[in-house]
Length: 224
Image 1: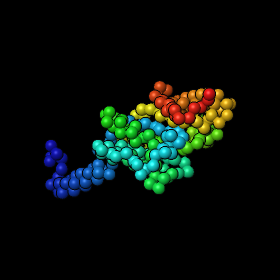
Image 2: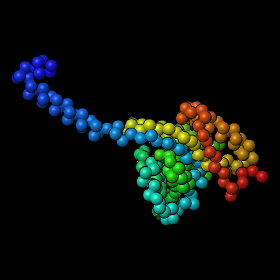
Image 3: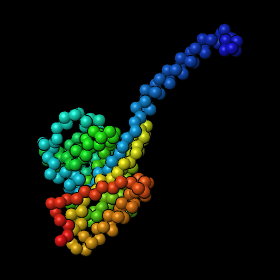
Image 4: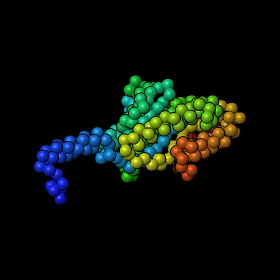
């Protein structure tokens, strides 16, 4: 049927165009990430020094016995210290605080998730000695909370532009001591934290039942 439709003189042109089309298809396939698209489980870690890893000297970074770190995506931003420069990298110590850098609870957490069968990606946003009252602020204040939300959206967009399917699994919040500087701040903490969690679920992640884990520092008591 095809031969009947093409005159003899048109066959060379047909094969030339077919060859060109096949070449363009192969080039397109090699320059996109469709073949490498993954289902990713995203977890957010945020807070102050215990989230940052103030006591986590990278000279003592936990040994990666099962070679998991290179398979765990990691994006971090520590205002005033360091960041992954707006890119996804792999689980590692971060620059700052100590000569070889620092690390926090994300290492054990992410490795445990990987071992449990998740395909985890960790977004970490933290800075020591920060309070909701003075530093994180309320939604729309333009302070740390809004900055974190903006950075998270950039990180999510990067993954999705690469063709990955991302499911946000939860928020781990490790913060609180700096909101106990005064009795008034301590009493207002619950309300302020609820406001951030509500906004994060409704307007940042758009998942009203997103799991939120609150880390507790047993070494420093908020109020007695």
